[in-house]
Length: 66
Image 1 (tube, rainbow, N blue to C red):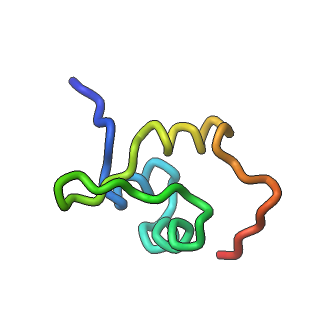
Image 2 (cartoon, rainbow, N blue to C red):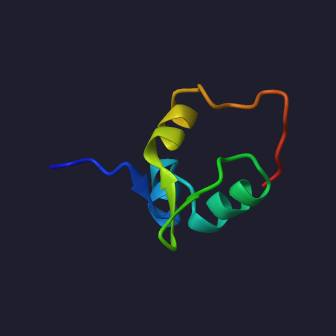
């Protein structure tokens, strides 16, 4: 089975164990990476989500309120 390289907001939120509404809020605040547009389809790169999980994309100097 092939792993996706880009996912919808709901799938990206599940990858981070967040409600989709919280995921979108964090994206809007700049705490999470913005999506890319693939022919009118908004998707998040799985590699960007994985980098967050691996601690490679964290922003320790910034605080974000939920």
